[in-house]
Length: 110
Image (cartoon, rainbow, N blue to C red):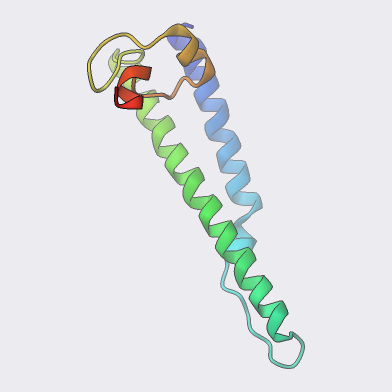
């Protein structure tokens, strides 16, 4: 996989994350508790859905940071090399996820 191919995949995924964030913004908002129209179980359900949406947003944020770091490594000419040991990351691993920062050995802690 070339750096250009990786950059295209990473920027496409980054745009997808941005769209997902925009689409789910309302779900993360503060839950309005209306005593007269919503029962206790409905409020609990709304709070649970809000918590799940917030957790999903945190995962997307972590992925966004990982993608931005990978794009920075591409710009610096460091992409494709393990951040821990400096060895080249396997082609199959990069094709599966061009944002991975470590080789299999370092990622698994072997």
